[in-house]
Image (cartoon, rainbow, N blue to C red; front, top):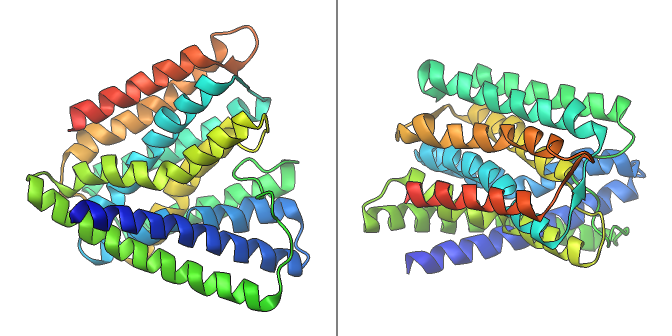
Length: 310
């Protein structure tokens, strides 16, 4: 029954996120906002909505480990699982933006999260404000100096919709996200009690993999279609948003504290490690790229993480 609640919650979160994304893009196009701005702001926030709603709901319900574990686990899954599997289907050629902007910002965000957690085992409201402020600075920099969006690209069906459809998708998206987060948190906490494990274990495995399914699906479809709809920059951008936006906004609403010490002594080091290793992997080859060998290594690392977690 608990697995059904989790699956139902994930389905609603994915559907809700897609509906919200559709309405947000349609509204932005109707307002004639440039596509690059839509891609780096509206789309990014909409695609982070499932993680954001789950984390806020979990923190408000006193399940801070679910809120933190969801983000840390998702960041590990994005690079270990999603990027790893995607590389098995085709190579990625890396641009200068990766090592000049994307990777350094991701490492700064990850290091800040560790610093805030290690100093008091809680992310206070002012620390959330710092994280969210850095997101705003990051977006302003991208809009001013970057010619292409590095976080998320527009969906293929980015066409204006009638107003009633835009409102309908917005309402359905909001209801889907709220209902999905309620089911997911209820199922996850009950599952943890049923099997005698902590909420952190469920969060960094089941919940984080579930919330990474949209990125995995989009990545595989893009590679099979030989499109550049997903790139290393997109996944790194998602990790940056998870820390700056999801953790930032959640901790502004309510402080996030650690209950399970292994989030701080184990999981966050996996997140830092798998994020850091991307840079040397890219520079191992004469041509800056990632291929199937690097993909296998990332998947293996992710499997070891899941094994030692369970």
